[in-house]
Image (tube, rainbow, N blue to C red):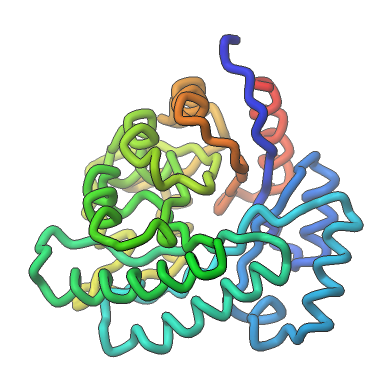
Length: 293
C-alpha cells in the first residue's frame, strides 16, 4: 500500500465495558499504545481524584507502557446549547481538562451540541460564548477541547470554529459519525478541518437512510442527547449502523491518506460502542490499522 502510517494506535478503555483498571490491561493486551478514558462521572470524575490519586493513576498507566491519548469529557444533554446550564458545564469541563493535564494529556474530547444554522440566534450565541471561554482556558494550558465530528457537516463546523479567537477548541475527527448521520465525506472533511484536528477516532458505519441529526444528537427544545441513545441507534440498525472496521462506508485508505496529507501526527483511537464482543472487535481493529504501517 502507498500509505505508511506512523501514528500511534489508541483505544477507548470504556469500550471494553470492564472498568478502568481492567480496561487498561485489556488495551495493553490488544496491542494499543495509548488509551482514551471517559472522565465525567464515577471513579474518573475529577472531583473523585485528589492529587495523590492522580499521580498514582498516571504512574500505573505509564507502568503498563501506555499513555493517554485524550480524556472524554462529553457532558451529554444539549451540549452547550442551553445558556442557563452553561456556567456549570463550562466549570466541569475545565476541571476535566485540569485532570487531563495531571494525567499527561492535553486533549479532552466532547460534544458541544449541533451547531445551528442561525448565527444570530440564542442557541448559536450560547454555544459560541461557552466555546470561547473553554478555548481560552485550554489555550492557557497549551491544551485543547476537541469537538467530535458528526452532528453537522465539516464545512459548517469549520465556520463555527473560525468565529472563535483561539484554536483551544478544536476537533476530534470521527469518520463513521459523518458517514452514518450527515452523509458527509470523511476524506474531504479532513481537508476542510485540517487546521483544527488534534485527535481522531477510527470507527466504521453504514448510513441506512437519511436521518435528522436532532434525533441522534438531540437539540434544545427537541430532545436530550446521551451516548447510550446514540449507541442504541447504532446497534439497532434502522437509520444507521456501527460495524467493524472495513465493513462500512468509511474508505479508510482515503481517510488515512487525507490525515497523512495534512501532516496529522496524533493518535488513531479505536472506538467500539456496540457489539456483543467488543474486545474481539477492538483486537481486529488494531490489526486492521497495523496493515497500513
